[in-house]
Length: 310
DNA sequence: CAGTGTCAAGGTGGA
DNA sequence: TCCACCTTGACACTG
Image (cartoon, rainbow, N blue to C red; front, side, top):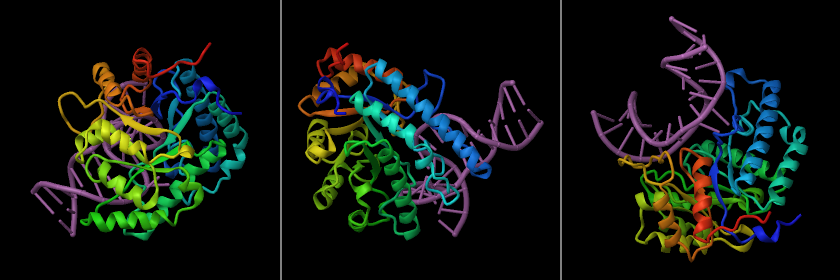
């Protein structure tokens, strides 16, 4: 079922992984030491049920962008996990996917720091690929198209930026198609800038997700508006429009930290500045859905977001 | 039962 | 060469 017309093309706003309002988590996990097939199945069942609740909440609030937690299936890429979770929960995943597509929602995932595609140690690369395969399997199980993305950082520098970027390109070309169609890179706060990511894009074709906050902390010669525009051009039709990570600088300065709540004026200014660029915005703000609700209101008022009819 | 140390996985930079 | 830090929530143990 295609997304309703009134939802396509409009900016979508969202938040990552956790909803603090509804009293359940879709990322419940447990210690590896207490791993068992039963424990896994019980946890995944509960996580999927909660994910459904979060998405229903989001729909009510016109929050149409959401990042699914990497802990949805705990230890999925670990050798300890031999469970056929894709089969066991095929129906639940399919239902979630139908809900997402039917309401014109967009999904991303963001494996954490341990996924290093350009690592020098082949073992790290191998574990990273396994983790990416798991992320792709989750999105595939929901039958989501190529606009549902998996975002990663470029990786380590290892004292030689050029060689490390080349290593990224080399490893990238070896990835499965199921990963390639979803993988995007993101500029980070200390290693690889937007300019670095764009160079990797030129070599590989990989889309560049724009992290506005990281770009402020770790700039590369362009302003926010131009950087957003340049990143936007790396996304093709099948990728959907640009994804942007946005957060307000933490008051009081400690760089890299995320603010407790959205700075409405700053956000409004950001929207105005980047107005020419079509994008979906992920708010990396500690209070999660509260800020997303506020942002939806602001974007609505500023004419960047059209709520669903009815 | 509240408080808190620890958790699969890495890279970086200072000592 | 080693260790704290990055950033984060929550599991699971301790008293």
